[in-house]
Length: 243
Image (cartoon, rainbow, N blue to C red; front, side, top):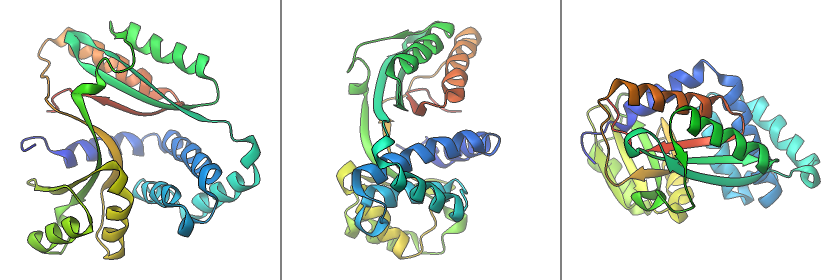
């Protein structure tokens, strides 16, 4: 995994997020609504809601906005009809793309996602066509500059909490977990005051592909930009080699 700076990618995403906080808050608001509907409005008894709240705080969502979202969702539990959908496909030069969405209209979302692929000269495939090239993992990224703990102590804390792997980058630490253990590991680190630049269940490519053709790069960016602009889209994963 060395050579791929997750923190650089996180910072890049955050910069884009900072330019479009409304989009990010909409995404997280939907996740809060679904988490409340599935497990109730009390974070102490709802690990999924705790994870979403942690994600909200990592994206600088104000506490009162989070609280309003929870209360609103609790009052509208019977009206929350969002469901998770996943699409898989290929971008230029066979770049693998996975799109996760949370929608109240699957026909609309599928049409928009298909359009994003098409405009970037890509194609939507069948379920499973590219996901086998990724590993689903809980991923926690910690900014080295923000963390005062000794790296060895941090590693032991993470492993003792149930993490599968711990790695050091030049500017960050990365903790990987089984998806089922993610919430417990994240909570253990949070309880010890460990600052997290990012904490989420994600899809990590097993291998990376480097694009060098300018046309391919432009087309892929068109697809990614269109997906990023879609309020239904929660996350997009690719096996593109990040610069």
